[in-house]
Structures are given as structure tokens and as C-alpha cells.
Length: 295
Ligand SMILES: Cc1ncc(COP(=O)(O)O)c(C=O)c1O
Image (cartoon, rainbow, N blue to C red; front, side, top):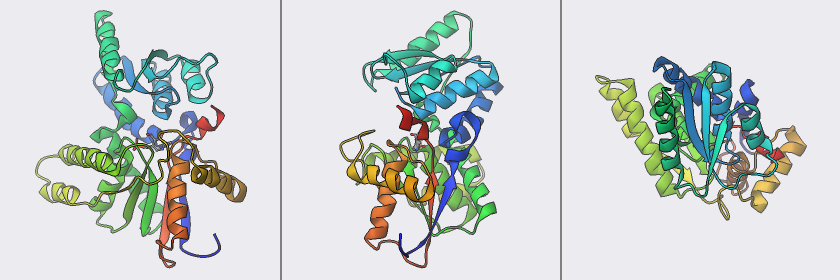
């Protein structure tokens, strides 16, 4: 970039299980909870190209569980990328026309499982429950074992769990790294409310009696930038396409079009606008999703 801050990348795209990404970290905790509750079917939802759905199907396959995915969108004639992997992983995939229709279809699937004497476990969108977000508290701890706290962490945000975990991780570790979530779809106000809700759930998860922790989480700053969404979720922008090209051609790093390319577009725009200090260390948290390049 011709000078400026020190730039680092945390490579959750390089997590090995099922093509990796942030959803693998969340799924480790969420699937463990499903097993602890004697569940035998994982049910979740997402878009047709959902990374979270792919990882849920992969966890189910590996753990010997059934998996039902509710996908909003049209059934593809020839599944590609995440849709192809979900099918290979043996998930039952049900299609609904809209995002709003997903919850009812998940409930219907759960009722059918119970009627067949099975024990379903419903995972909300993106596994962004307090438990799923706790995976990013752990991830932040892992980062601090690797490097000194960066001045700024920039990452893609959508269902809020990754950001809630990182913000909580920083607050609990008592470090002052700024966490900036670049929205993949929602407005900053909507997402900030989502992240705050998950943070309050995380405080409950940490347990009663830890008032200091609860206060640290409630008082933590939630910074979201929604200027890079463009025409909407999954729709490329000139800046996101340029970010994909730049990272591939200079670092052989692959960004995905829906999440990480827009987050990197946000980082590059801030860099070019001189909004990041030369003396700063800026960490881009690569949350994966590169499978979607093949959709
Ligand atoms: C590749 C990728 N990056 C980032 C995100 C956003 O993470 P979160 O849903 O925890 O906000 C998602 C999922 O929504 C994703 O699949």
C-alpha cells in the first residue's frame, strides 16, 4: 500500500475443517451444546450460498447427526460452491422464498423431527447466539497469544456474533483495540442493536456474580460501518471487486464477494482517506467464505 500502518491478517479462512471460516469456531461450541443435550438433528437456515449452512452440515456429518437446512432462495438447477458442499455433506435442504419464511419452516422441520422421535437442535442464523459468540472471545485470546494487541481490528459483520465475541474478548482482556465491523447487509443501527443483544447474553453466559464483567461488556464500544454494502447483500461493488483483485494479485489471499471483500474495501478506503494512523497496527480478521468464489 506504499506506506502507512502495519497491516496484519488473521487467517480464519485457513481453518482446515470443511473449508474453514468464522462459522467453524462458532460451531465447535454450538455443536458441543447440541451433543450435550442429546440432540440428533441440527436444523439451521441461511441463504442458498450460506457459509454457516455448509459448516453446520459438515459438523453434523462429522458427528453422525442429521442436518436440515432451510435456504431462502430458488433451488439451484446445478448446485455450486456452498450449495454443492451442503448437498455432498448429506444435508436435507428445504427452500423457502424469503428470509422471513425461514423461521416457520425451521419450526415445521423441528416438529417433524420430534414426531419421528428424534431430538432436533435449532441453530439461529449465523450461530450468533451468546454461545456461538463466545468462540470469538476464545479467538481473541488466541490472537493475544500470537501478537501484541493491535490498535484496530477490522472484520466483516452480519449476524453480529463475531463482532460481539471480539468486542467482549477485548473488554474482558482489558485491551483497548478498536473493533470495527464492516456490514455485509444491515444498517449500522440494526447491527449495533444485534451486537448489544448478544453482548448482554454473553454477560449472562459468563455467569451471575461477575458484575465487573457484565459492566465491561455493557459499556464496550460497538463500532459498525455500513458504507460498503452497496446495492445489498451479496451484490458486488466496484470497491469490493477491486479488493478481491488486489489481495489475490499482491498476497495470493482470496476474499469472498459477500463478506470479506466488502470488509477489505472498508479497510482500504479508511487507509486511503488517512483515517488509520501510520504508527498503528491494523489487523484484518479474515472470516473465510472463499468457497463462494466458485458459485
Ligand atoms: C465469511 C463470513 N464472514 C463474516 C460473516 C459475518 O459474521 P457474523 O454473522 O458473526 O456477523 C459471515 C456470516 O455471516 C461469513 O460467512
